[in-house]
Length: 265
Image 1 (cartoon, rainbow, N blue to C red):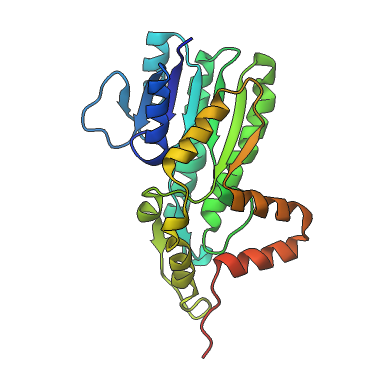
Image 2 (image 1 turned 90 degrees about the vertical axis):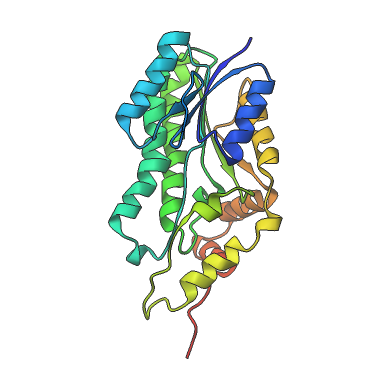
């Protein structure tokens, strides 16, 4: 049976690929996106940070089609920089988009969902372990993971499944659109910029959005999905290490892999 799919962040990257896959599958896809020039029945202008916009968009879909079968929260972005030097407004915006945006979409979609429905919250491999100079992004996605587990327990009696999916590095415009706070001081020197350049420079080694989207689609079709999935072998291995190594050792390894020491004079 064809499904009604609500998808945020569906105009680029993984979200766009997902929208195309669901459409090819014969499903009806309703994309909620912030930058929409011309609205239509299936493309709605909606900033997930705005409760009114989210509420109105979901109600339009729910009242006209009576039921929402799949919700995929793909909208998000990242902030990078030293936590000490990140402006509060930027920190709040990080959580407003990645966490509270997910919370709001689900809050207003759930009343239109029935047994057999599924909510997929796109988290990140960065939710699985701390990284230097990406602390706010890691924290916002970690919050998505725990929120997803709690929501899954609450909705279990209703037959609605909740899944958090943690993709690793993917070839999208995410890195380009990331807010980079390069402000520094004597404490950090050039370590902030060098660390971010080190990570952002590995574009060719990233997974394709098509590959990640196919994985997510396949998960959405499972009758009994797991509460969490990791996409990307490297990140599955790092997650495994994080479960068996002492915390101090894991933090040392991730600092070496993703960080950069301050230049010594």
